[in-house]
Image (tube, rainbow, N blue to C red; front, side, top):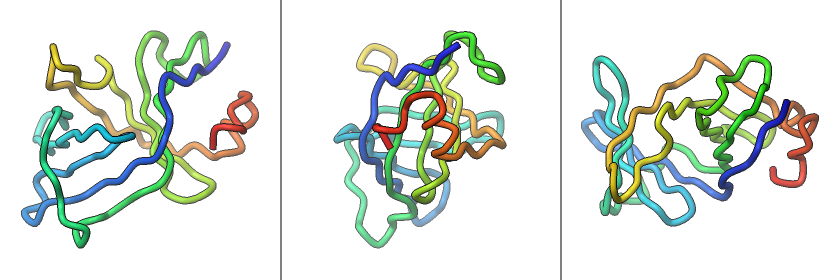
Length: 127
């Protein structure tokens, strides 16, 4: 039972004026986050937002669970900090977009994970 960190760093989240899409910056890579009726999508993007549209920033972890209770094996999870002590969890069933596959689903989970939970899994030095 473990959680492995595939990637970590700082993130910034911006929202467009029409509120139909967001821009997510993960360690220098830009993703467009489209809100759709059936599912939200992440796509690689070259867009540059304005500072006044910033709606979130902090630390992120890209996690890969193995036999972890309450987590699906073989699926990436994105944890975005919404404060110093808590992370909002997103499921990436097919991982992050790549140059080869530039669009992937992102599912918001009704789950907030505390920094203490990650520390108990041995990830305290990362957050």
